[in-house]
Image (cartoon, one colour):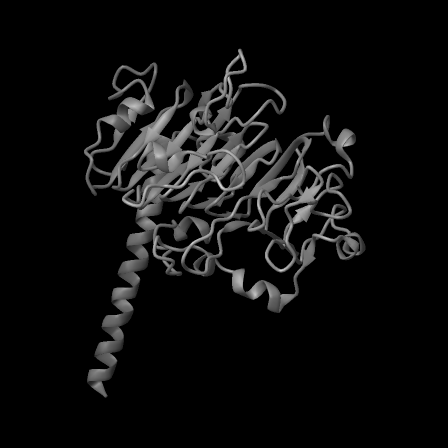
Length: 395
């Protein structure tokens, strides 16, 4: 009996140590962002104006990192950085944006910005990835969006990229145009695991691209756009965030989906979030005009769950994508769904009468109701979500 109590006591002490250590790590991260103190050892500081900084650009800081599995942190001091950032390394990278409000994405003080689309001013076309403010992918070939509903095949010997990328309190803004004028990425994320916490993503068309084998988790972030601004082949989980409509075009989601040799749940999941007009000026002009999504190919999968929808959303919810008179929606294959949504934009009757929208019940949503059930590794195995900052995500 005494031995049992001793074991229980040791277990309790160990649990307390683990929890306390995690809490210290969280507090230290926020202290680093707010005061520049208690940062992880070896933290690299970036500033365009502060003389004590290690680098003046974020890309220079990234290029200074070794191409190995070691973990590194970059603290970006307040300011606007006009540059494209490309991360190919496999080792963990954490980008911290300096802020006085680490739990409020509307008060971010760090902006990475670029102005580009998938064509230049002469109309010459390039792949969508070249427009991106931030690219996280191991190779150029693995990051290419490609043309059409299937994109380009990724070479079989392509390695998996960053295993644990994290960004906190940074806005990624593509300023190519103040309206939809072709794909203009704020983010391109492929063959990598990554979490974005209290970040902002701003563009008009194709704002956030999660490419093949990309696993991206967004927490209390802002994702803004007009046309198909959440799209890709991989898996995105958007938790407790704001999806802002800067206009209506196509749909909010336009997933492609990918054929593989194993069953998958690639798609975009918008959970416990707000879907609404970006501001009071645009709201009156888009009442009842915006679609939740449309299928880039028949393997499109998207679910809005327990989310608030303002009056911008069409009564039918989703729409088909019709090319030359042929729709891309395929019954029993395409999943464009909602679960327990509410607000003036949710019209149950309209959804039921729609030929493409699905309203899930609890049983129908259960296979998708946790990140561990949808995120997969390159071999198709579910459950590896250790790269998510759960201490932040569970606050």
